[in-house]
Structures are given as C-alpha cells and as structure tokens.
Length: 305
Image (cartoon, rainbow, N blue to C red; front, top):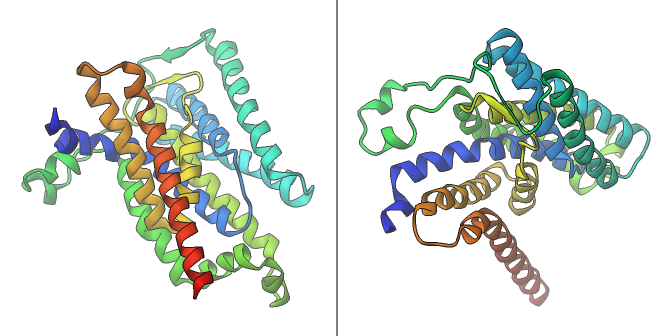
C-alpha cells in the first residue's frame, strides 16, 4: 500500500490531473494581479470543454477542438469584462451567475444537439495523442513519470516558467502587479489600467480555454455534464494560496492533484469510498488552513517588530 504514495503511476497521474488546474491557475494569476477578481473560472472551463468536444466531433481534429475551446472561453471573458469593467457589476455575483449558467447552457446544448443527457461518447471525438520525448526515454523512473503525456500537459508545465518570467521580469508584469496593490497610483503614472485589465482577461481566457479543452480531449474523448466538477474552484484556491506567484500556484495545484491521484490508487483497498473521494477537497482545506496560519504568524511577527 505504501508503494502507491510514491509510485511512478501515482506521480504521472498527478501531473496529468494537475494540468487543468495549472492552466486555469496560470491564466487566473494575470486577472488576479490586474485586480479583476473572478470566481467564475469554473464556467470558463466547462464552456470550453463542451465546445472543444464539439469542434473535435465536427472535424475529428483535436486542434480544431482546441481552437473552439479557446474561442468560447474568450467570448466568456468578453462577457465578464463588459459586465465588470464597463458596467461596474459585482465580480463575485457575475462569476456565480456565469458558473450556474454554464452548467445549464452546456446541458441544454448537449440535449439539443446530441439528444443525450449525462455523457456523450463518439468515435469522431479525437483526443491529443501522447508524445514521446527522446531525452527522457532512457532515464529510469523519469521516463514513467514525465514521458508519454500529451501536448497540453507539456504546455501546462512550460507555462509555469513563462508566466513567472512575464510577471516578475517584464514591464508588463510590473504594471499588472501594480494594479493589484495600488491601482490609483498606476493611473496617476499615466498607465491605461483598463487596457491592462483587458489584456489580462484575454490571457486568462486563452489559458482557461486550453484547460477546458484538456478535459474532453486530454485522453477521454468524451464529454459529461458538469465535466469541470469543481476544478475551477480548486484553481481559484491555488491562486489564493500562491498569492499570484506562478511557482507557488503550481505547487498548490500539484498538492491537489496528488491527493486526487492518491484517492484513485487507494480505491482498491479497504478504505471507505467516501473518504477516498474526499481526499482532494480535504487537501484543499488543509493547505488553506496551513497557509492562513502562516499568514497570521507572519503578520504577528511583523507587528511585534
């Protein structure tokens, strides 16, 4: 049983399960830094998952599915941006409304287009194929953990480094970080804050579109109602835990995904299924609790100084 905790299969599954969380988290970081809070990440993932499936179904191409997924997520970002930035609507209310609407909308489309409720499986839905990386093929253990994933998994891993560089090493990153801490000061410096908010929303839309595409086309070749299943909220929790730092957000996503992968591996043992299925969410609560305790201690030590 102990072998499951650190087996190559568990770690490989962790990377795969972390992919949608990482992609959504990386995109969400930009919106969070630009002071555009959005609790509706779940809706972006679910909408892009459906339309990615639809695009792949119509053309038998996962790349067209990816394009459909990104476009649908960008449209959702446009709607969110108009409501929040231009109409000054409450972002939390808008996010909740979009989450509920996305669930109902995708269920309606599934029933209307395919006359199916629940799950839709068709041989015309094509997923991204696994990629063999020559440099990893002959490295023991690593070849089983890091090799043989699909394109979207590697995009997620690369995006962590790219996002870190953009946010902390470029003028663009400096400006959106300034929006988070003092938007008035940024405006006073003559920077168009609305422009940077829109750019951040577009980036978030692209990442969420790739993330949602991974759900049906990352290997399953199917779509189910409410396919995002809370992953948008886990990504949001990772953003909060990581405080907008891509490396910390990535680590939080790995912890959540590891708990999920472990829960799958433990289902074969005599452990109540309810406890096993609760593992990812218990990990989320635990990480949030630990992070909050750390913040309280840091604040207390600062006051003491």
